[in-house]
Image (cartoon, rainbow, N blue to C red):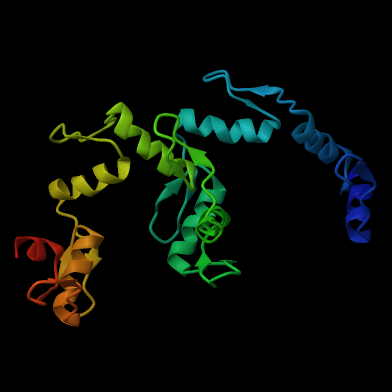
Length: 231
């Protein structure tokens, strides 16, 4: 009968359970209790492995997948697997090309909301993440984390093949292409393939004839900065 009562409230659009502090309303009392924890800071569900605490049991269950390395959600297109259904949904958009999140300033579209939020910092100029060592500020936390490796000298991302170490996982991923021979960036004009996007961009100047580097002495133009420096 309680399920029927809840069902009727949904159909009527009624939300009898209200939190006075923020005026938010809920159909069922249990949802209100969960919401209250966001205000009170209550986190009764604790991970036995790392000690991290959560407001809801469902969030703890999702978190545990990090420790078990279980990836139950599989992409039907490329068979890549994910721990969370939300991660799978975001990944599927890379196949469909769907970008539902639009910037109201410049009109650029993004696959997921966090990417739009990060992009908006470009327009606002906001840099909330500050380095405690040199006071340099960054728009997002990941850039600050990468920057800190300059001060610590930490290179925690190691190549299993040759042992070379890198400060960032992205640099290790690029390096691994030396061993795998992977060249994911393809020229649409001649079909030539490259390991790095920067290499493709440099190559494209052959087709476009672009020479952005100019010598102020003899006025000669160069397609590549390296050739300009040699000159």
